[in-house]
Amino acid sequence: MRKISRKSWLGRLTRAGAVFGTVGLCSLSTAWGQDRGAYDSEDQKPGARYFQSALQEQPPASAKIPSEGEPGAPESPATGTAEALPGMAAETPAAAPEEGPWSLTSVFNNQRRGTNWLSDNGWKLGGSTVQSYTINFDHPADHYNGPVTWTDRSDEYQLNQQWLYLERATDTTTKDWDIGGRVDVLYGTSARLTTEAGLEDNINRQSNNYGLAIPAFYVETAYKKLKVKWGHFISPVGYFTVDTTQNFFNTIPYTYQYGEPFTHTGALATYTVNDNLVIGSGVIRGWDNFDGSGYGSRQLGWMGTATYTWKDKSSLAWVALWSQEQNGFSQNPANPNADPQHSGRYFQTLVYTRPITDKINYVAQSDFGTQSDANTASSRLAGTNGGTARWYGLNQYLFYTYNEKWTWGANFEWFRDEEGYRVGGFLPNLPNTSASTNTSGLNPNRSGYIGNFYQVTLGPKWQINKNMFLRPNFRVDWFGGQATNTNADGSPAQPYNDGNKRSQEIIATDFCITY
Image (cartoon, rainbow, N blue to C red; front, side, top):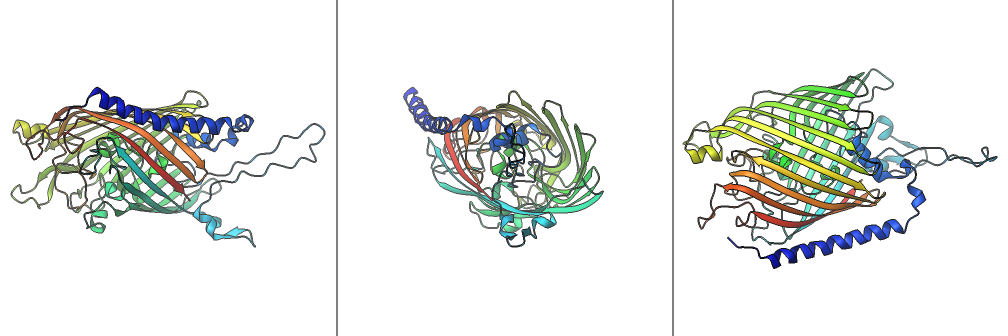
């Protein structure tokens, strides 16, 4: 194993510091060059509104999305009346509504008639384009940033997502009944990371880095305070979501990639009990499972949700799942292509958000998952026929909104793969088994890690304008535990740098356009 000298570490940190120092100077020069009085009113700060929606306000219990719609949905324009000067109230005109970000819905505007047949009927059309480049200081030969995903390819360009959605959100504020729905389509390198059994594995049959995914297509019915999604939808678990534009960082934590589901197929009902509490319950096919084919189970599972919001805008969200999932064994061990076995899996997540000040927000997330009768690395080492698998972790985030254009974030994560069952590979199913998909990813031997994964991510989000933002961040990852698989030379297959290191440092930057 190659040792890292102190000079090498100092050199890397110096290079990283130079990059982020330059970004910091840009943010300060931008801020000081603007009129400070323009930020006295919260309505004048779209950046602050974004974080209030994402971090403080009560989210819908059935989706990790802004209150105005799912990923990419534009904000509602702020309205207000200008304060009149003494003696001039009659002559002072009302302030014009603040213009929101441009969206594809605007293409259907009829300027002559002042109508838009799409939005006039409650529909929204939108999307986003996300492109990234990640520098890995080790420059691995396989061009993978180990188990770090989303921006998983090192030292090369990625079109992470080309996202389009069409949505009609339900609204029962003026009537008792309503019906709506939503369809999302994703093309890019992130598509292979959201593969669902029986769906994307039938679409993406070529082994390459790009693919097509359909994260959601569902019908939503609403009666007063009750809403029900019927179909295929993005999982509400945790703090991160599939659409990367809705996350603060462009790299994702271990808890999300390896500890949580991405999508579900079934029915999920949510009920608004009062202004503080939203609860939900539903029947699903389990984790990332469309029709039970391939590695998916044909048995039904259960999902429960609850979100409580306090007067100070602090909130606590809980989601729990129980389902039958692939456990790493085939029905016939002599036939590796045989249908897989399944066993019971329980998972729960808690997300707590709290506004510390008008500019500082704190988020904490915990995960816990367990599965019985699983083919774990620990059981293989012990020579036993499977055992109980457990994975859990803690994520903490701190966000500082400097002004409408610059927000800084920090994330520290600890994720433990107790029996070496979850981390490794890029499929949302178990990494140590052969799935029916032909999705490219890490070498299969880069799995079976018994121990703790840690990562620290630091960086800003630069809101260039209402439709564009840039997210550079510096991330350090390290692993403490036992690597149970081996490289070709017989050495332990470590998580990073072609299987040769226990740690890595990367700078990941992406450019996002929403519309």
